[in-house]
Image (cartoon, rainbow, N blue to C red; front, side, top):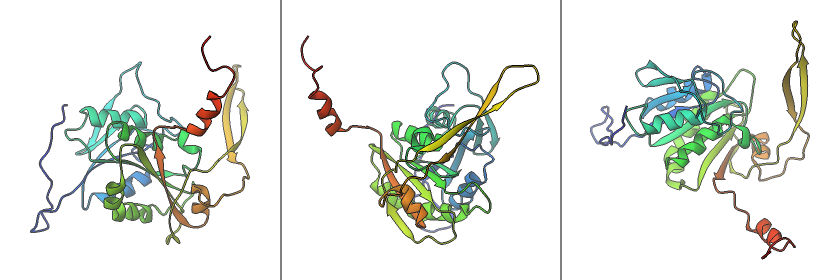
Length: 268
C-alpha cells in the first residue's frame, strides 16, 4: 500500500484550525503491552495515532531487521497492525507503505523496564526510535524503570504528550531521544543526561530436556556500579525523568587521534 502526502489535520472540536501530529506507536513488548496502550490512550485524544507493533515480545532484538523471510503484517483495528518482525521492521514497514500515511513522529514504548546506559545497544525500543531517524522522522524511545506492577504508565504518557512540541522543536536528524522515567506518581524533575555505564552480572541457567541435549537461559542483574551524577541511571534513581539525546554517528575524535599516532599508521 503506497503512502501519499496528506493535507494538514484539523481538530473538529475547535473552530480554528489546529495542527495535529501523525503519531506512529511501536515497541518491543508487543502490540498488547499495557505501556503501548497507555500511550495510545494519551495521544489518540489530540492526534492521529497509528500502531504498527510486533505481534509478540521482541525485547533485546536491538536493530535487527528481517531480510531472509517475509514479514507478516496483520490489521487488528482501523489504524493498528501486528507485525511478525522486529521493532525496526515495524518502522520500516510503516514508512514504506504498510500504512497509508507517513508518520510525523515515532514513539516507541512505553517499555516495561528501563533502557539505561549500555541497554540502548540491545534495546528494541531504542532501535525503533533509531530506525525512525534513519528515515528522517523524529524518534523517541520511552521506558519505565520497573518490571513489576503497579505501573505508572499514564504519568509517563502524559509527560511525553505535554512536552511533544518541545521535543520536536529541538530534534534534528543527528539523534533520537531516549526517555526513562521512574515508576512513581510525581516526578522530582526532568534532567538531560548522558548514558551511564550499565554492566550486568550475567549467568547461564542450564535446562536438560528428557531426550538429551542442553538448553540455556541467560540471566543477569545490573552490577553494583557507582551512580555518576549527570547520567541517566543516576537521574532516574533520584526520581527524575531522564532525557538522553543519543547520537547516531558514534564519532570520537580523541580516540581516533590516539590510533593515528600508532606505529602501524602510514605507507607500507
